Image (cartoon, rainbow, N blue to C red; front, side, top):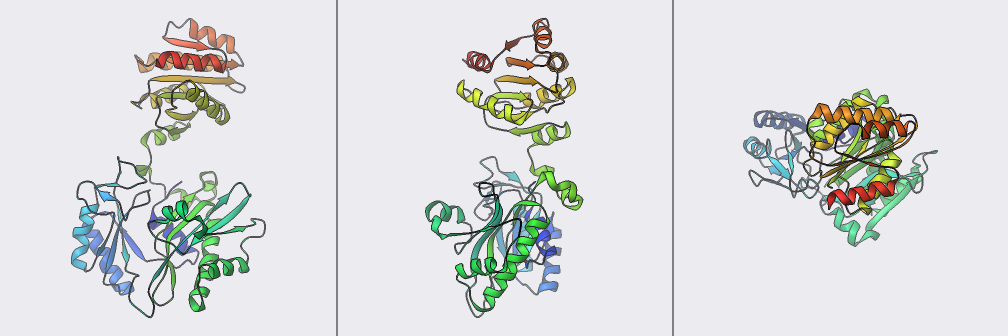
Length: 403
């Protein structure tokens, strides 16, 4: 589950990570109020207005309606409300949102931390995530922090520092020092970075996250280390242990079809193809997507109706798939283990009747428990449904209907 920057910073702060302080607002007036509070609490006189969406690249992104950047600097209280107004309610387009962009419902008003002092501020990159290949967590860091970290990873990967953490023993003090040394830090800045890394790792483990990305981590002009930005992904499967974190979900940032599928108890991920698929079981769903591609089509979605598929879930799956205008055909691939194929067939027929005319062709492959009964129900329904027995037959049918 993705969360907003201001929410991620709240988690970090609760684990002792020093952050760029900020207050979230949803109107220009509240943005100004937030800036006044920040001025009183931190003494800052410049303010960073940051769009809050579930996507990176906000600093270089543009608000379609006003041509404002997604992250702007207000050099006085008088500039805060007008600059927030140019972002709020607009559609922010970044390299991660795609051309459709995302609507901005909130902004974070943050303190200015790039103040002058004894040395120049320096930006670093740091993230913690699970390396599945090594069954370990890994800290990734770089001296090249900022908005172009993707370019660094692509063209100068040697500038990315990696330190693997054995989850059975956790982060050791020497490993945090090792990362800080490799970043070229010394003196008080090194001590602050070591403390920062330990706190960040505790936040990662304590919140059951799959990724923490801080870009940039800032060394201020007086050698403090703090998180200026934060991108966090929480493990959905662990949210039952974190009721407070589960409440951070913002469904307005998610695909409406994926939200609807979640309510119906379906595992659905929207893709960009033209063949909708409805399958029971994640492994079979992946194989079905491969078959679609081999047939010359492109999967329009991943949809796992689960082991307990019935008429209700099948109908819900149909409705969700058909809301995608790119879908030109639907492939239903069910293996009857726990689920009975006759129940799925009944669900297909009932869904067809309840939804009304379905203009796209439907290929149904049923195998396993009560497969013959299911095939008979489909055959006697009189509906425009193409039966298939083996995956190869299903692939040929998909190719045929797309031709």
